[in-house]
Structures are given as C-alpha cells and as structure tokens.
Length: 191
Ligand code: ZN
Image 1 (cartoon, protein in one colour):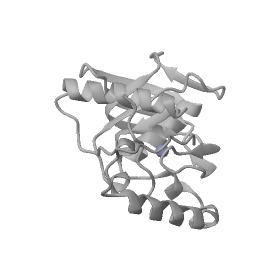
Image 2: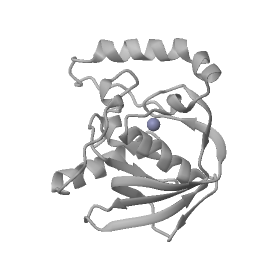
Image 3: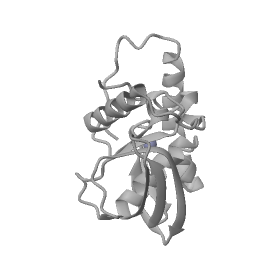
Image 4: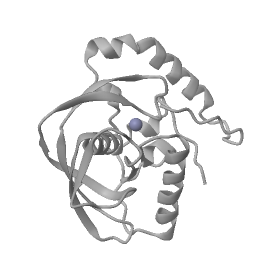
C-alpha cells in the first residue's frame, strides 16, 4: 500500500523515533508499505516520520542511482533498518540533497563520506555495515529524520534563508491540512 508522505510543517517530522521492539507483523507490513511508497515517489530513502510514525524504522535503496556508493559487507538492496545507529563518520562529501517531505527544495549538503551503521533487520538479527558515497549520504539523511532532524537544518544560513519563503508557504499549507481526513490523497511529489 502506498502511504501518504507527511510534508514539512507536520510536527511528527520533529519527533524523535521510539525504539521498535518487538518486531511485529504490523512493523513488517509497515516496512513493505514504506518501500512501496519510496519507490512510487522515486526516492532513495524514507523514514517512518515521513509517513507519520515516530519510530526507529527506515528503508533505503540506492541501487537505481548512477552516483557512486559502496556497502561492506555486500548486503542486498533494499535495506530495511530497524533501530539504526550511526558511528565512525569518516571524511567528507558535498552533494545535492532533497527530501520527499520538502518538495522543490534541494541544496548542496556536507556529510561524512563514510559511516558505520548498526541496526536490526526485520528478523530482529543485528546487522552492521560500512557505507560510502551516496549510501552514506542516504543513511545520514534518514537517520537524521529518525532523530527529528531535517536536511534544511544542515544547510548553511544563506542557503536556508534563500528557501525561507518556500518553507513558510509549505508549512502553512501543511498546517492547513492537519486535522482533515486523508481521504482525498494528494499526489506524490518527486523530490
Ligand atoms: Zn528526507
């Protein structure tokens, strides 16, 4: 099932995720729905906050991208990460970044070029990998979401100021829709 992607201005995007335990059938279904939602929106990652749930669950698939990335050991895409934790940031990369929750906003964002991710998979088994390039960027972006942090928080002040009108407008639109039923699903926007 394709879920509605929560947009900037919704308070859930600023909530820290709760730990997921135990991993129930409902969580597995949610992960499957998040993957379907991410693919439908042409995204490379989606965090639970973006579909309105403040829990430590994110999905990532960078396999369609032409940008460089590595994963060690070689785990297959997509990645479903339960309770992920980032460590050992190394090096630096700067690249264009956008967010499915903040349409029509993108900017150059500085991130670590390599990170170590520890998480559980949907079977509750621990997984650990080193990611570089685009995958490291996606992991940092999504794990930020799980902590209530958005990529606009990582923009330099001048860049963020240049989007202030757009962000205010989006926030206003989002707040106006809060409390209304989601029966009229809005079209998904590529970002
Ligand atoms: Zn995002």
